[in-house]
Image (cartoon, helix red, strand yellow):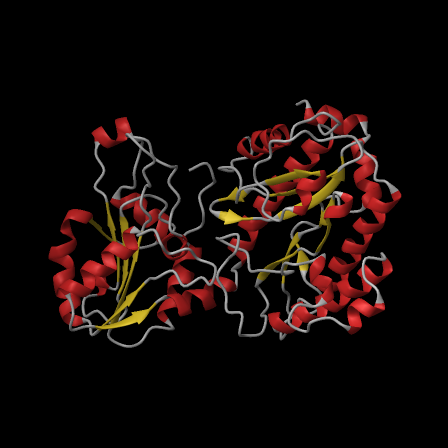
Length: 439
């Protein structure tokens, strides 16, 4: 891993929160992700399952976490099962966790090798009455591909059909959504790396630059700052491409007079950041581009004020819609007749702003959380209104990451990243920012 060591107290506290929500006489089990094959002997880079990482800090394949708080033996109340390491593995693959290293990472004292799973767990399952299994219940999840967790659950239910099964997801969605201070520090680091990337490209962008060259500059800056890279597939869309919400080809030339919409951000220690900024290719917005830009920025500024404890996300999005409606009227994109005749299920503003304004963010870019409960302090959300005008080859979206606080407005993790149109123009034409891009 490129990131600095994380204090194991984070994972100890996270397990305590999970245990507090478990039913008596129950055991919970969490698996690492697979290393996914491409073809021949090629694989995709390993990405750890966020839940086992959240609860243990273990960031390697073929690992299993077991939590059994009512176990008779104290040594079986928390256990890790890991792939046994060796000198040969260290030579070919690099160092893996030793038993001492696993404790140092997770705070879990009992560590077994995977080959001892059946021997150890037979007694655990005999003692437990209920088993918490970990299924992916994110509302936007694609669950077609069978995971290591899926295969494990299938075998578990076959081998232990008499047990009662419970879901881990509702517990994790609740506790993962409220961040610990250590988590917020990690997310702040991801945002700081993202800032460095943005400042770098401000001096690099000019007419004739390719979208993928901007992407390359960002990756350069992220990797040199201990990030694995992008937290999600980056969007770098110039001109009409900015009106495609999930444009990821990034293969076109950036032309004079266009605005580039860039939705990108760094990860750090598996924690995501999520930024969107729009900049003029030539270094200066036209008046129309600036008017649209400032309209989006005003919506964002007012929307942020609604991210306070007690707010329900459904009502929040309705309020933001009204803010956007007002701005679209001011820009001449909507008129009174559009409002009077609009479909309540698809309001008029949706023609130019068709996506949501905020989502949970944390270990996943679209992080887990309960949309049916009010906001709480410690939750982190994006705020990303946008206006897309294909007829003008213009798309503007502006996005920051915000921490809900007990009182007052949210804390902006991206407060130091340039956002005002005039500041962006000034920086793009600064000699200092050009030197940064060449470093």
